[in-house]
Image 1: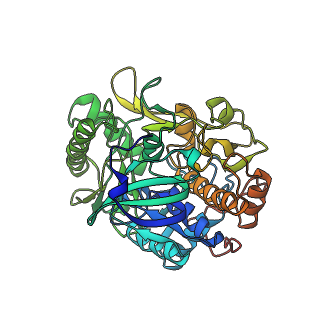
Image 2: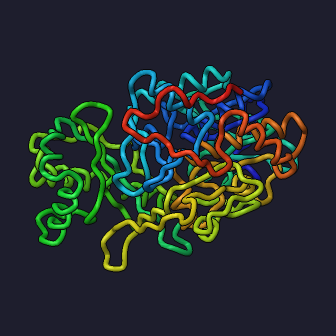
Image 3: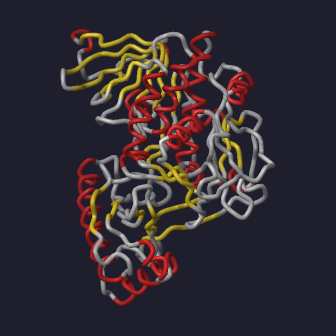
Length: 463
């Protein structure tokens, strides 16, 4: 794609082998994997002042590590385990039971997680720049490298990279580089957006004695049906946090706005904050244990579930998920149900669930993280190659971290072997993934999902 910026006048900030765009859970793991395995320069850029993306901006739970149901199995391993082990050692996690349908969640302190991401990224030897935003891509893939224009407090700069991993969430790099993608909402209604909020001074014992989740659902249903409080939906979660007497929510629903259009994203941010304080009043007025609770924090930005989904060499479909396929070129497993947050036919905004039958899991092929015309680019996180329904299953952070892990190793193989993204031996990539503890085959052992069940027995092998 031709640049609108005169790159000849820009100072070269860095020349690297591998550039990772975006330090969310997928990008951070991609950079850690690449930095640990590859001996050449690896760089990670992030537009915010801290890493983690969704994992630290708005959520406090890793989903996707375990399959839901009565026989949970652990389907994520490797570097994601290292992340959770660090949180466990400082007492900053507990396992939250399967209360909302998606399986056992790994609850953590998001502020501690920022620090853990920082540590692991730096320990991997990655050149790490925060407050740095990708604004243009000036070169073609055929040139054998990318010239990426970035902006930070010091101005515009050029980063030259032999390989790029797009972990931007919105596929910003792929968009600027001219890769094809589908926009959320073009075929099916786009998943709604959510501003999460946290409340302090909650009497959780009183809440549980009054009926807990069942009681909360009844109160929300009554509030909507009787018009006591203008809630946007009849369902939503409010769960205990690592911090005592604090809860975190996934309740706000903002639909019918496009997160890739800045004016509509602005409207969404405003609406999300408005709804958050509507919920605060509802909780204080109606829910036992919340009488003296107050909001102490809103998500750093509104949570966006989907915008651009890149067309890859392969595309994960709903049929692949529900048939429980384990492809020969699989790079990760997913057992998360299809969890589609959308506006329903009656105008309310609810969640549609579909569970994976059989073993309760499926495999994700390597081609879903390689753009269809790519030679030196990978795409990971919620912008990977999937249909709307499949994306609604495979967007959990356990899976996005697993994508990043695979992409970081794949980029390293590509550089070392002088092979394109589509040419690398997937069997070699799989061997490397298995060697560091990734799970690629259906596990038979039932996982320990008790509250303190994580333990230190999940240390993966070193890269």
